[in-house]
Structures are given as structure tokens and as C-alpha cells.
Length: 329
Length: 128
Image (cartoon, rainbow over all chains, first blue to last red; front, side, top):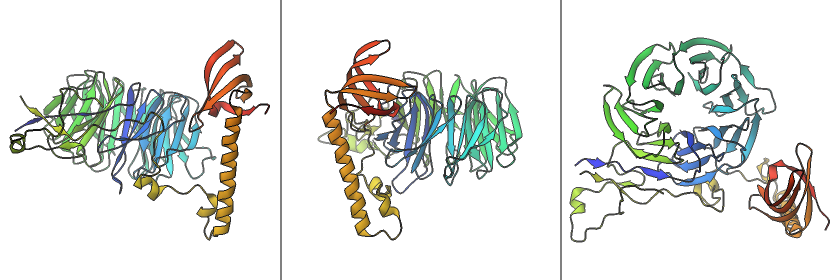
């Protein structure tokens, strides 16, 4: 019997949620960080959405947030012209990195020793977190604000997406652009999957996949709405995407077929990410909430409980939790 | 009509009174380095640990007593951008991120109630 998806709503933010990131899988589970225009990024337990803590210190909207693989460090990028590094266990602020303009994107290398930042001053910066007083390595080149900057190819290359309508692949050692992709319109999001060496780029109503070394197009998927963010399942079975029409879309990666669409958010969806184990995906919206969605609807996982039809029909029928049409935390 | 998936409970929301990061959680206990610098040095002897902890407790207590004695007194705050303002101290929040003050004297008028962001304050002084 097919079941209807019950998204779990995580409230707490008071303004639009513009970015989110999962950590890797740690001995304590995996974690989720959300960037919000209220300036207070939050850390949550990844599989339940339970709030763990709020990173307090930024004086402006937080545009980007990330966690290192073992969720011991967090980094945030904000409109107060700083990027901050945090201890993700105690919530303490560890480092403030001053920039000359709004910072939009932050990303740790795999060993957590370096932080890549990018923002409205159009320059990519690499900070050595063990020598915070040293000037960062700067990589200029983009001619408009940088929206997203990611490490790839074992942290030897950098992928950056900018309002100048290009996505560029840089060699970190030579600071040179190795490859450039040009678009007719702004790129809304970019994701990198090391396994398979794929870059996912969204623009307009298109989700596109490229080889991360050659930047050659693999395939594109057309959607019904302007997409703000998309994520590819770790096993490359599915893509989830969200955008202007408030819905979440799920596509089969192999066939490009639209499998499902889910209503739930009350505003445009700004970011969507699969969890590291692929069992759920999280979406952040203009409505100020995060929602967790099951990949396999009906499976017992996290807070979702599979109730078999036989269990529903018994002498004392009592659902495990009375489920109203719309659930809000 | 499809049956909606059942849920054990809703995700827990933020605690309005604190910024979280529960020090009693298993992850915190396992991963958080102690903030006593003496204990993170190799070969730390218990005596120096004790001295350092005693000094820290004494300083913390002094700071808290200072906050108590400031209540309802007129304080002069020296802040960034050469800002010097007077106000009557009300209270501090638990993480010392904000000070609640009354009658904040600003160049553009008196603010009856205000919150001063502690990270903007360089120093403050008052008569005991």
C-alpha cells in the first residue's frame, strides 16, 4: 500500500533559510547546519531534525554554512563581511575572518585544515586555519559576486559559480582557471559529488550534470519551475530539487523521469540536500522552516515509523501519533 | 486516499533560554577539550591543574559579583567607533552576549530601554 510522505518541519528560524549542509557520518550520527537571514545559524541532529544549538555572533544575515566531515567544526559566511569558524561541539566561535564585502560561501578541505571562502568581492580565498593570522591565498578572476565555491579532486581543484554567469574550475596551486563554463543566465546552485566526479548545476528551470574534470555536459533535466537548488542521491538513484513554486521534485537520475512532487513549504525553496546516507533530504525555504523528507516513503527511519496495515486494524486501534494534515514543530 | 506515514514525535525545537550545545550530551563529553590550558599540556601535574582551576573559579566569581554590583548603577560604556555612552545597568544574559540597560544616553536622544551588544563594548566603568 503506497503511503503519503509526512515531512518533518523544523522551526526555530525567524527568517528565510538560505543554505544548509550535512556533515559526514560520525560515531554520533550525522548533523545538519542551516544558514538563515536572521543571522543565527543552527546545528541539528541530521536524522531527527532535533535542535542541538545555535551559533551566536554574526551581526548580519548568514548566507552560507558548512560542517567538516566529522562535524567538529562549522563555518559560516555572512552579510557582516566576515566568515566565522566555530567549534561545532561547544558552539564557541573559534575564528573570525574579515572580508571586504558580503561573504556567500564557505567550504572546508577534507582534512579541515583550510577554508575556502567566496563572496561579493569576487575573489576566492583560501585560509590556513592553523595559521589564521597569515594572509589567505587569493584567486581573483570572476567579474561578479561568487555564489558558491567548493573544493574538489582531493582538494587540488576549486569549483566556483558566480553571478558573472560562469562556473570555473581552478587549480589551487597555480591559482589559474583550468576550465570555464558559460551560461546565458545566472547559475542558481552547484553541487559536487566526488563519487562519479559529477558537478550538478541548476539554472532557470534546468538541472544539469557535468563531468567535473572536463566540464563536459552529461545530461540535463527540465523542470516545471525555476529551480533554486538540487541534490543528487549519494548512490545516484535520485535527484531532488526545489524552487520558486514551493514544491519539492524528485527525479530518477537514470531515466530523468519525474517521480514525485511534494507540497509543504509556504515559500520558495532555497536549498535542498540529501543526507550522507541518502535516507532523507532536507529543504530550507523562504518560509523560515527546514523540512526533512523521506527518500523511501514509509520506511522506519529517524522519527518516521513504518506501521503495517495489519497493525492498523486491531482491537484497540490507536495510531502511534495522531497525524494531522499539516504538522508543524 | 493514501495513509500518511506515522511519526514518533516532532523534531525538538530550540530552547528559548539557551544557545544549546548541551555539555552533558555524550558527544560533548567525548569530544570537548577541557578549557583548562594546564591540563592540555603533556605531563600536567595535578597541582598546577588545581592552581589554574582555583584561579579561574576566583576570576569567574569576581566577574559575576561585579555584574551583581552593577545593577541599577550608572555605567559608562566605551565602544568601537569612539562611542561613549552612559546607561543604567539592568542585567546580562547568560552567555554575556547582551546587556539590558535603561536610559541609554545617545547623541540622538535618550533610549528608555535598550540592549547593548557585548561584543561591541571595549570597556565599561562605574562608581561602586
